[in-house]
Length: 172
Image 1 (cartoon, helix red, strand yellow):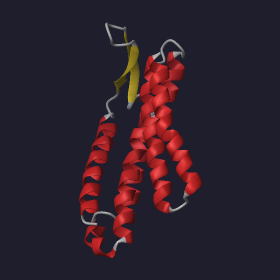
Image 2: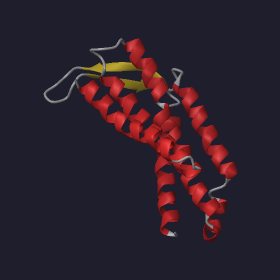
Image 3: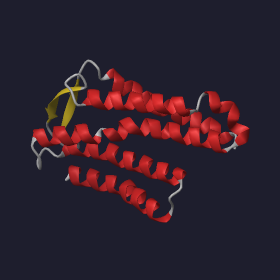
Image 4: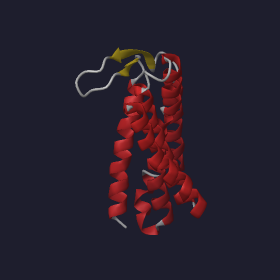
């Protein structure tokens, strides 16, 4: 039941993402669409951890690792928003030292490396099953490997990029 609810919630940004592409094809709306798609994948990867009554652990593991692209690749997407604003607004060029093409490539490469680590036992070693208790449903919890810090750094960079995006938008 919880799995179905969580998965259903993930469809909201997915449908919005797809519908945005039907109405506009600018680079900013494409980036917004990718952002919403990654947000949807982030919710889905959590949802599949609650699918213990419907799927095998092997299927949950594969789907969790694939959909982990959501929280990982949302970081360069957030960076792109700041990069786009700086590039398109001449009065924001002072932020160009922080938001530029090499930075975009760097954050994309960091995300790709983090995503590839995710597919090894260095990223996620195994899973521990948590039985249902009171109002907490049963679910799997990932046991992270020694290189999981790359994922933590990646998520931290999401929040740092969000902070800088907030500062840049205040200048508009």
